[in-house]
Length: 92
Image (tube, rainbow, N blue to C red; front, side):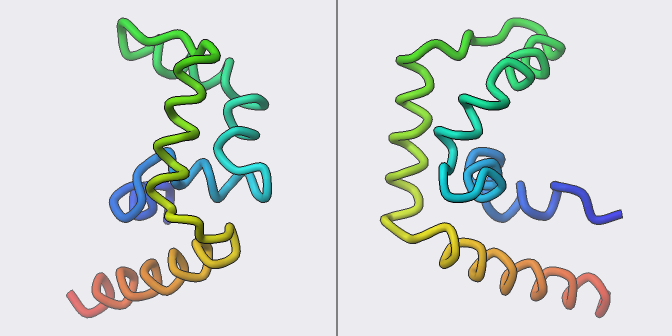
């Protein structure tokens, strides 16, 4: 019922994956689930290969985006915003 859509709208997929992977962040996600991510991208047509250089670009981009905040801090901010979104939806 409440899939990743609200998270993606607020944080985008990479930050969502970063939080979902826990303390290892996006680097752990790419290491563990990179092959399945490539398969999902491939199902959309042409897709990039998750080679070391691209993985590092993604990790660097996420690191810049989260500005040094911990997984716990990011999760708390996400939860607050998601509750606000749910509240707005219920009022509509």
